[in-house]
Picture 1: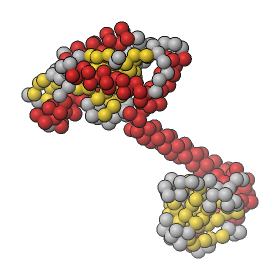
Picture 2: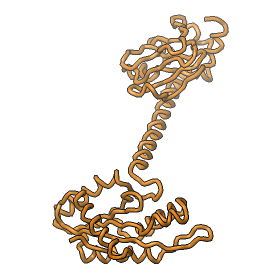
Picture 3: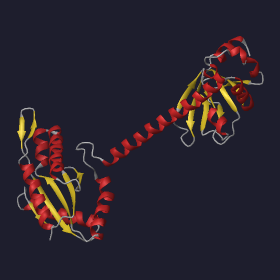
Length: 315
């Protein structure tokens, strides 16, 4: 190796805190390789028998099955291939040069000779492997957190913070099935903000959004933890009340209606109240969700026809 490469290799993390001259002779069987940008060094399912030291340039690590996404970037002074070298299995990642790079590849038997010769090298190699595992765990946690965040965004209404229709189908069906199986009553209710279009037209959509959030928060505070609540769309909300018969559902609906009627919506110097109309359909049979929503909607329409700010029961 030339003097420049020797100086760079000596600075590699594998030889940290040791006398490089004491092992330099053991690297005579190592091969140096120049990679062009985009050229592969390691590939998934292709056996690897070397520890690769990055002398210059940068490498991009892409996990198998996620080749379009960069998992990590490695630069001069770092190693790659240590995991597959230690466990004897093919690499789990695609490693390519993200720019022209120069690599020193140490054969596996030379790696173990270096480890046997130097406690410092053994310690450094262990540190490299541990660091890679720690980084991979951190990436896994980050990926899992991102997945949970995406799931949350998919099932929660961004404006009001309550669940949305995508969440409703599965969650409602499970609760309805449990109640029907146990021969327990349950009630589906649909609520609609009265004259909501007038609020938007008179005060603007910002005030309309504040109204929706206020109504959603008020309803949430008045429901039980076991009750299911979603923003169905626009100014409509749907609730599923397990273990609730017609008599108790009517009391809940009236409590919600009164709570909204008594709530003041504030924005700057503006203060006003809105009301809701509620349609309810009680049952203890395992009916189709769409059918129950249709019945609650008919009851809601009747409440509107009767003057709004009231509750109507289907049937």
